[in-house]
Image (cartoon, rainbow, N blue to C red):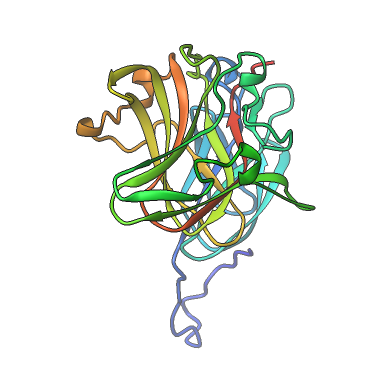
Length: 281
C-alpha cells in the first residue's frame, strides 16, 4: 500500500474509486492481569491508521484493502493482507506475556480433553434432540470411530448427522463432571474446523438451571468446506434470556462445560480448540 498526494489542479484526475473497506483485529493473547505495559496503540506503517488498545486487543474498524505492516512503537510485529469487505483477525504474541492452552487437538486418540487428563471425566459426548440423529458415531460405536487422520492435521474429530427439526451437539466437561474452572482471563477461543453447518459454540456454567440446561455464553459461527480458523471473543457473545444465554462476565469464573450445537448441515470436523489468555500448566 502506498500513499500519494492528489493534485486537484491536474485536470487529468477525473475521479477516485474507493474499494469497500476492511477491518482488522490484532489479538495479543495477554490476560487482563498482564496487560500493564502493553502499548496503547499500534499503527499500519506509512498510513494514517492507528488502533487503540481495547483490553488486550487492537481494532482497526475501517481500513482500505491492501497489504500492510503492523508496527508497535518502533517495532514491526506483523504483515497482513486485507481483501475488500474482509474482517481479519490475527494473533500477534507478546514475548513473555502471551499465553494459551490447547484444550483439545485429538492427537492422543482418546476421548478426554487435555484438562481431563488431570481431572478425569466421562469424555466427549454426542446428543441429538428432536428430529435429528448422528450417522457417525452411532450408538454402538466407540470414540475411535469419529477420529480421522491426515499428514497436515494429525488426528481430528469428524462427525456426520441428519437434522430435520431439532439439533445435535457434541460436548465435554472441562474437568471433573461436577467441577468448574475460572476462565475469566480468557481473551479468545480459537477453533480449526471444516464442515457445511452453522455452529453455536458455548462455554457453560457448571450448575444446572433445569434438566441438562445450563447458563451459557454462546457464539455463532459458520464452518467452511476448507479448513479454517474460527475466532470467538468474550464480550461478543449472543444474548438470549429465554435460552439462558448470558454475558461472559456473569459466568466466566465458574465454567464447567464446552459445547458445540449444530442445527443445520450434515457434517463437522474439528482439529484443534485453543483457549487464549489462559495457561493451566
